[in-house]
Image (cartoon, rainbow, N blue to C red):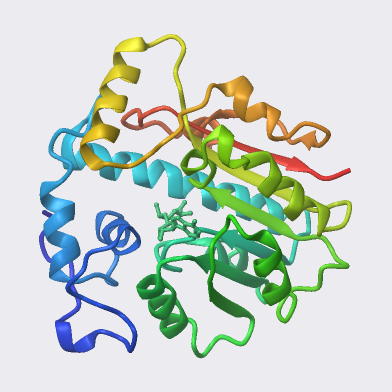
Length: 278
Ligand SMILES: C[S@@+](CC[C@H](N)C(=O)[O-])C[C@H]1O[C@@H](n2cnc3c(N)ncnc32)[C@H](O)[C@@H]1O
């Protein structure tokens, strides 16, 4: 448990947010050190991950992994808003817009960036809408990323699809198995944005070199009941077919342009990558 970390009281729950039913987005906020969660989320965060695998492992290991993933999102979005000049983003299955999520990362580099967040959990969407209520350049949609046409239609009220867009699918496609058409989702999204747009992905890794780790992760997926499709580096690289992949390519999350001299506990294998639409 993080000492002295503030947690919201039940009566602080925004309209449409059920503080009694924990959700992944709020648990993530808690584990990342945020303030937008309730006792129910803290309970899960403190107890559900005691067997989390990895070098650090346990609840502390989850924190290491989540921070590595969020730091990599921040670097990629910062690169898009900086070197690539992207000013509008569509972030699918975003979780809560807290703790350095996309609009904060983009605006740290280029104030005024527009962001549409999408999450299918009604409680997460209501919470996101509450947090962004006073921000005219962000919108939080309750929608399912498996229906890109619905998202694109609704996002068009905020984003200009005649100009390049940063598509952010962080920690998303591993919830889509091959029969469910991850490529179809990408094709529909990329078909709607102009040349010069970018696709950013992060994805749970299947690590060919470490079958013991794979076995442990598969066992954990069984315990959590989550249906996760882990993919190898080349399988994730294939999602970028026909695009210009930005160096260093598809790499372990912590290795996507790490800050000079950065090192820390090694997170679980996860791929990150960024590519430009031709
Ligand atoms: C792990 S969390 C946040 C991940 C976030 N993109 C990140 O990298 O920090 C995953 C979120 O995906 C949402 N989600 C799961 N399935 C979804 C779907 N089919 N469409 C949209 N959101 C979904 C969940 O509600 C949850 O808030």
